[in-house]
Length: 345
Image 1 (cartoon, rainbow, N blue to C red):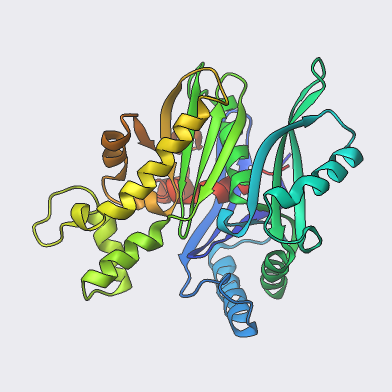
Image 2 (image 1 turned 180 degrees about the vertical axis):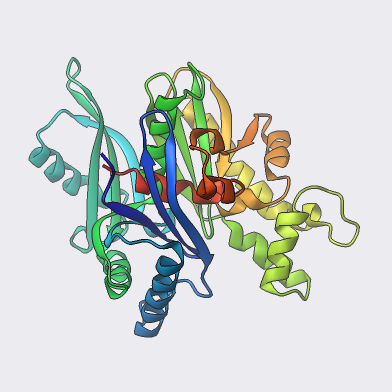
């Protein structure tokens, strides 16, 4: 049965829209759109920023010919808190109470000022344990995006973060066509102001570990901006056309961006080491997506620095061929979370 809603990713740098249907063994792209914002809607909840974002969204909806009013909203991982952990096997009411009691250990704001979303990933009745995905976001963040969406004439039916939406997509794709029959994979969401790492057990088709850290596309952008008198568009073009390819005599970006890249790689290495304590089998592949995945040569550069095969998370083969999927075939790595958001049941 086709869904009656679409997904909207309210990002720090982009607005993204997706109306996708899962036809069991293939995805159908009905409508997709994305556009760059001239401001970060999470920097301030000022009325003028909210109004401009709503107006921008209305224009996108009209251009994408989205007719549905119901929408699932995706917020950035940088604006939320995510954790996967084991808990005793409890009733839903007991589980929520226990999580609220422990939440202050990893959520740095008062529990009465956050919205909690809990997903039971796996129940182990034999050992009376459950694997839990917990997502929390400040009420102020939720209120901000809901206001933006409602002022665009839409009806929010749910709000989730990039992690939740992405893990859903990974799970659905793995069921359609397994990435591998065994082992594990790490998915790298190279975001705007932060990035996230997701450890996915391919044997059980389950996520087991997540990690968000404050290194994203913008720090690379700022380093270039501090050294060259270039516009934002020129910097974006440099990163997407030259990036880490080592083939330009004018701009040695590999040397200039070595410091943030080394920090980025160090976070991934620490995550890979910690994953050995979580699962007892090998991580075989790393997949990168998000805004930073558009950097030229990023997959090859990370492969050489990590000594792991790093691939762009290209999901073209999972889509039915039509005019929409053909038009956006080069942009799938940018659209991963909003596609997962469109598949929410």
